[in-house]
Amino acid sequence: MEQSSDRSIELMTELLSAIGKRSINNYLRFSLERELEEIATAYRERRDLLKKIETTLPKQQPGQPTLGRYHKDLQQHRKDTARRLVRRKRFGPVYDYVMLTGTLFFYLQANPDADENELRGLVEESIEKVDHAKIEADEDEIIGAYLDSLSGDYRKSPETKLLVEPFLDILERHKIVPSPRKLPRTRMMEAFFNWVGVEPTLRPQGIPAIARNLKHKLGRKTKLGRNTKR
Image (cartoon, rainbow, N blue to C red; front, side):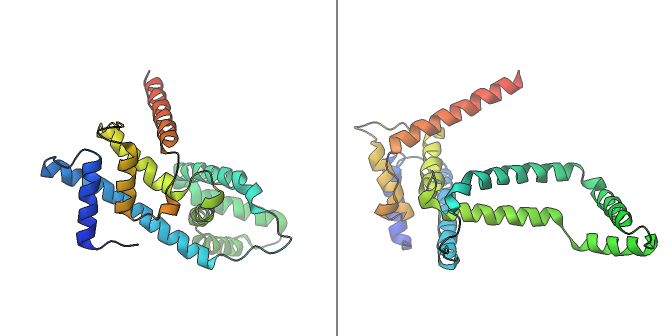
């Protein structure tokens, strides 16, 4: 549900109060509000996309293989695609030559009596029309959207991944430490969800566990970064 301008300002003030930042100077307030707006915008865009996908996805037919069993394979396929796209950029300067020479050799093996010059022209024309990198990138985007559409069966909901974790990260970076009396985390999260406009039924539970996991993950990344510098 979209908030009116006045209501949004009121809810932002309540949020800043909940995280102990209501009295900061205008510059710091603008910077913090911009970070929060970026999180909310990313979530709303993904939420709208998921709603659109839900209304257009074809229903699974009886006897069709259960798609849940292929989640890990699809995730691994996306990782492999990301690596291939990186490697593709590395050999980009010779890519056209490799494709032309390899395709021409392939067809000449199958058709040894074909006219090489005529065949070369046909191969060059076909290669120019096909952007293999774009095909892979488009496929990856579609698979990613499909996996996101199954958030109910997924380990992380969009609300956890796109709202809670980034918000907790902001608290960490701005050195905002929750405390049961002065700055209760429950009040922070309630004010944040109210400002974004998240329905109560979609608000993730177990925020302390999410915070611990996120802190552990960030700690591992920091350690890995230090080790690579040695």
